[in-house]
Structure formats: C-alpha cells, structure tokens
Amino acid sequence: KAGVTQTPRYLIKTRGQQVTLSCSPISGHRSVSWYQQTPGQGLQFLFEYFSETQRNKGNFPGRFSGRQFSNSRSEMNVSTLELGDSALYLCASSLGLAGEQFFGPGTRLTVL
Amino acid sequence: KNQVEQSPQSLIILEGKNCTLQCNYTVSPFSNLRWYKQDTGRGPVSLTIMTFSENTKSNGRYTATLDADTKQSSLHITASQLSDSASYICVAQGGNNRLAFGKGNQVVVIP
Image 1 (tube, rainbow over the protein chains, first blue to last red):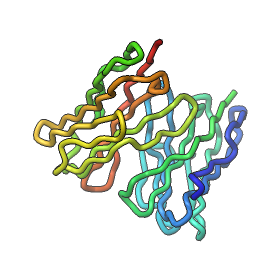
Image 2: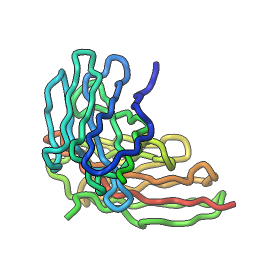
Image 3: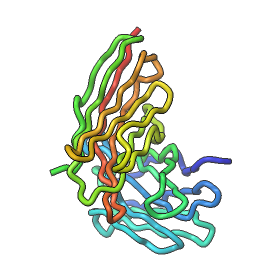
C-alpha cells in the first residue's frame, strides 16, 4: 500500500506570493491533518479534515487555509507569504479522526 | 506553556549504548501517548502508541513506558545503532482528539 505523498517536495517563493501544497493520503484513509514544523517550534498543528469538512483548527492566521476533496486528497494554501512561513509542511493521514497518523515526507517551503 | 515537555533536548551516545528519553505531559483528559521517530528531512514515523491502561510497549529495540498517574512517559533505546540518530517526538492525545506535540529529543549516535 502506497504511503502518504506530498507535492511538491521543495518550493521557493518570495514574500507576498501565495502557494498551494498537495497531499494524497493512504488509500482508504479519510482524515488528513496538516502541520508546520520549524526548528524552534517543533510540530505545530494547522488543521484537520475529515470527509471534506474541517474538523479541527490550530492557531494560525487566516492566510493559512485548506480543503479536502471527495477522494480524500487535500490541499493547503498560504497567501501573502511572509519570511516566517519558511518551514517544513507535513501532512498526515489516518483512517478516521483520532486514529494512528501516518506522515508524508513533507514539503520544504523557503520564502525569500 | 507547552502541554508536552521532553528532555533532554539533545544527547550524544556511543554506538551500542542504551539511552532513555523523557516526556512529561499535562493533557487532560488523556487518551493516548505516542512516540515518533523523525529522520532528518523526512516525516515522522510512529514507534508506539499507548493508551492510559498500558504501561509498556516495545517495538524492536525501542521500549516505551507510560505512567498515567504521574503523566510521564519514557522511550528506551537498547544497543543503539547509527541509524537511531534522529529526533524522537512525544505526542499526547486528549479526550477531545487534539494532539499535543513535544519539541523532540535530538539523538546523535556516534561510532
């Protein structure tokens, strides 16, 4: 069974631009969560989607948004990028809410 | 204040030696405690998941313990190998399904 895939793996953007990251969960998994990871802060929860609905949300500004499609694939969008948005963005899927999470390899975003 | 605190922040150990990583959490109500291993540049990989009724669980050379009364967990690595060099992340899940992440224990194994 294929694992969680994330695209792109690396991204370089400049301040003010917007970016869209994609996550394909493990087949059969219906829950997708997104995290931001920086060296100083560790893993920070962004949001969780289940059956195309956002079920939980972390403490991030409205510039961070996401969605989930009917096939459980998910995207997250960051608008008006800031230097501080440079981070590793991780996606994790699970069968359902509160289930064991399986992480993807992440997307490394660099904002210049 | 972070709901999950890990110590030590980092440590260096000789190949073949054992080490123990500590995790204290304040999540309440408590559902389960998870340990993940994250290699540099990769996503975390689950090592163990323990509910409040479990006090020890092993995965190969990794053994996790849980004391739900004192809200403490530990991860013991036996006979360390170079491939154990990684960040080990402790995660506590609350009754509201929210996950609280520690900042990780950075382990470096040297030959």
